[in-house]
Length: 223
Figure 1 (cartoon, rainbow, N blue to C red):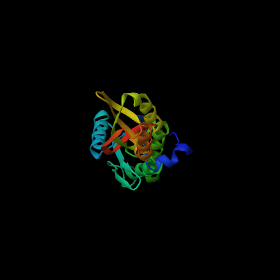
Figure 2 (figure 1 turned 30 degrees about the vertical axis):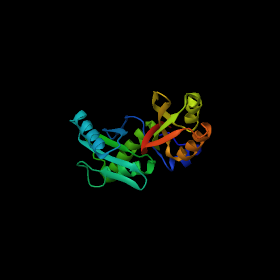
Figure 3 (figure 1 turned 90 degrees about the vertical axis):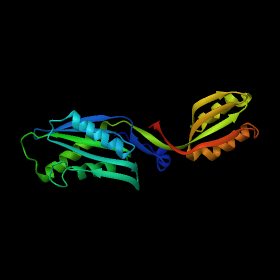
């Protein structure tokens, strides 16, 4: 799993890493195959749908052990299940690895094909943890940033400079409407909102009109 560099630590205290896409990894332990599949999940319903999809993809597997974290930090919904393995040997070990990874909004299913050799409780714990660590090692991630959605109305003479200002404050333009004036619908990190609004008013000599359309949204940015 890629590491977050020091320059983004302060921003990640307000945002956090999430899986950028689905990822898979496989290990073999005493002839048993452990296939770990990780994916982003932003709601419990998405996580449950993913778990069911993996069960349907591997219908002949011995076990399908799920775990997920929805949210991040102290505001999370967490779940795990042993799916027929001895109690505490599969779901909880997977969940502990996820919680220690620093990633949020993630669902993992470890699919096991029994190879004929019993691993014992300790062996199962290690095998499931190693499988999850293997998939996290290859997992690409994005940063989930807390942002807001604004409508900014500016004159045509300020349009290009406004575009550059939005970019400077790490914002993105969602839509543009050219009428009597230019209306820009944008998303911008919530932490940058006060300084951006002040700078836009300075740039336009106070003529810019700014409306908050959505006070809080989450957007994904490349890590």
